[in-house]
Length: 162
Length: 274
Image (cartoon, rainbow over all chains, first blue to last red):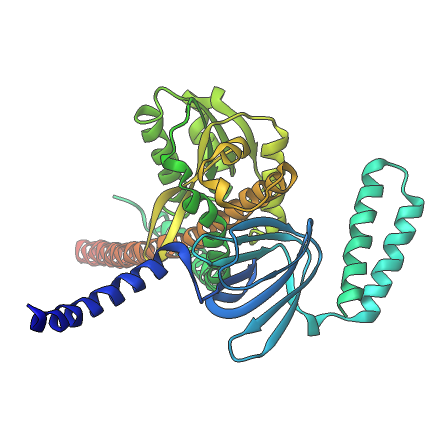
């Protein structure tokens, strides 16, 4: 009887290991963060594993790491910083959109407009901001005012990101 | 027997029609190349927009479902095979089948499907837009439409977007993507796993998702339409070519017959004088 015990243990070990693995993939712990990041006309990431992504939402800025709680949020104009697994940081500017973190730790960022930060021009942003401020001053209706305010938010965020 | 003149007129018109269909094919080939190129990012975008609905599994959730909203995506322009009639056929089949007990409302993009639906189901149309299909669909078009749908105040418990899903140059299939109103999302059980959601965020999220889905289906539809038009125009060009061959043959035979007839007349006239 005694002599059989180690054998049983020996047999049980792979079994235990198998169980441990199946637990980790069934929703308790994730080391991966597959990101899908796309605008209507350009896709930047398609289920690519990354180590972190920072976004700014209507309810505040948010850093997403693997194993984040599921969350949905609306993007506000601002920076999306993607930390790739090899340590590179890619920065994008988005106008608006949505971000979803799902239970399986996958992240979707869908932006209405998105561009790498290097494509933005400080001078143009300043010009746009000035124009929107002018519009705000000359706005007569509630709608014009709202449009101008959205423009100001956008250009201010762009200038801040640059 | 047709006179020489009639045949030559016919031949000329068939030839010019062939030229038209040929150039239409070239145009839609160029447009198709662009549409296909733009479809790739739009697909990723569309899959992303659908994922929340799929993760929360709203379709199978038990709720009272009485009102249905169907958004039909096609376009204004014809000569593209069965693109439009397939969308109409698919909704009609559903209306007579699984949607029979629903109160269905229709939102229609494009004149072609609208005219097909107007007869029997005309009263169900709540919103229709035209002047669509000439240019490449933009996200602005989709978001404007989503806005209109929400502003029209149409109530629904469940819905679907009917569109043509592009498969390859020679094939597409008419499919549908389910859509849900914002209160279905709010009351969904699976949504509770998502961290602190307020109604504003959900409303924004829902509007954006609807616009994204419509955009995605527009892109799929545009790509299928161009590819289908390309195929249709190629077939038309080929048919016109066959017709030209037959007409040329007939023209030449008739011409020969006329010459032979004249020769006989001259020869017999000369023989009579002798």
